[in-house]
Length: 592
Image 1 (tube, helix red, strand yellow):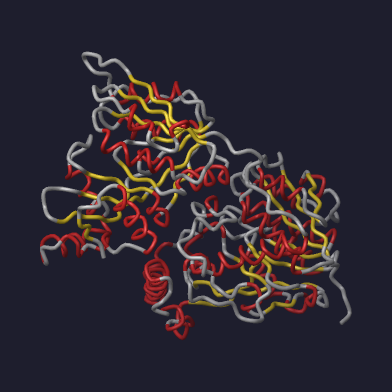
Image 2 (cartoon, rainbow, N blue to C red; image 1 turned 60 degrees about the vertical axis):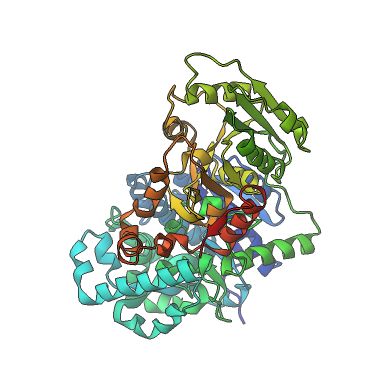
């Protein structure tokens, strides 16, 4: 095969964050092609986190800061004015700007451009015989009209069929991990609502490629305010007008899963890649909340048998083996985390929270206990192996008593850690909670993390207790981990943590972990909580989507455990079992 396209690859990045999956993208390419060289172009300030520093240490990878104007100035006179178009696009539209910049760099240097939301599975070197190549993908027919503001296209029958098909695949993936095989069953109906269209996430070309030149000329007349106008829409139009200038490769090469179904890479355990696939493209813009939580340990997923989890495991293990290097810790040093407990007169309940602290896998930790009650916990604390990590601060009771918010503020002042986490005395915490929440905050480059979903364990006078999954607005306040700063709790007896959560979010930034992490935290109703029992049970019908299940279980079959929130995952059941050993040995728990 006559080689035309040089074996050089490049990525483009701008922004202060640099998620782990970006690092994975580059590592996967290095493993797939032992002779490839890679340039990562940075527009603006370099990211400041461990993932980017680890990128800097990779062999055959160069990091180059560029000024877009310096690139555009090297273009021929008739296309140099794309720089003007570039600057008309708002900085917030980073992808639209990146489209123009990638075309310019490809035209000047040649090589292969890759989006960072790709993971390479085999070498692309056998595609070097093309003068220029792109790949096509399956897309919804009505998508271009929709992003152009023509909302009424959603009412067309075939587009309603697309919506139904998408919802079925999404439900199968999210609730059944793809076990119903609905995606495969619905493949024959894809032609009703889909079409094949080129994408520009993967592009290869020789220097001064005529096709890339036509793309740059097309940018001059593009309505750049419309999403995709400088990207897939433009590439599709130019490929249709000049088919002799570019090789459009089959769907399975780069985009075996449609962008609207990229959730399957993260959740569908039945998904397999076709043998002809060179890479996966997971459409990062569809997973803005998930991406920051993904790490090398795959703690973000309930199953290691998804395509993404398996690719992470394979790439990392092969990279360590082939480069003979130890895996790099996400943090150069392990910061001290202060777990903050406020309690009074319930040592029997607080015992479990202390036990959970003791079992945390994160090694650099302390437990700060603020006690304004009459009962003394000193002897109980001495019985724990972690006693030397506990600072028990006994306050003299005041009249009137300090509010819960004031007591929490005292715990913050006493904390010695860089990070703090609310550690209520009446909840149960998974051993990995500290490690996972800190990892999520670090990878997201924010100063706080919290869980949206938790397990709810409601005890009453009945013979059975109820355990189900529930969510809470922005996030569950009691799950908050935050970098210690100037924000403090309001002086309130209730909802002080909800207000504090919002203030921390505004001050520090907040990453919220999704439903897959509900097993990390069990909220326990025992009769002496700050909130009443109904506050907990209200989670069963808080969202509109839960109303049908609530009506069915509460009013039709008169069995609340038939609500879908009681259908626990294996991880959730395991957490529940762990809790019963230490907290509720004599109470029967109801779960499905």
